[in-house]
Structure formats: C-alpha cells, structure tokens
Image (cartoon, rainbow, N blue to C red):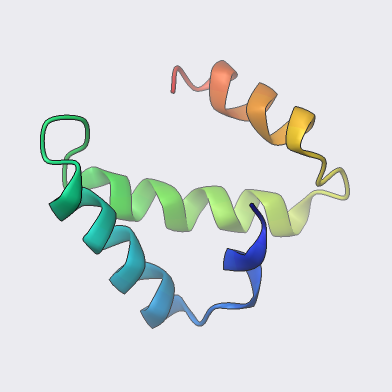
Length: 62
C-alpha cells in the first residue's frame, strides 16, 4: 500500500494517470493531483498505518 512513497513525482503522476485511464467510470483527471497531495500528507504525518490512511480518505469523502 505504501510503495508509492519511494516513487518520483513524475512516476507517481504517471501511475495515477494510468489508474484514471483504467477506471474511467470511477475516477476523473483530478485524481492525479489528489493522489499527489495525499502522498504529501502521508509524508508529513508519522502515522502510516493502513487504518489511519483509510480514516484520512474517509474524512475526505473518498
């Protein structure tokens, strides 16, 4: 789940774009920027458990 933390920003955007292309009915182009922002939030926070990440997503309405 957290392997994206070691990706460069360009790679992260590339992979997030692929997800948008694959899940056209479930995502839109803003997902790429939102995912980059989510990565930055995770990097700034010390709690990196799956439970905490899920709570963050739920707070944001994901």
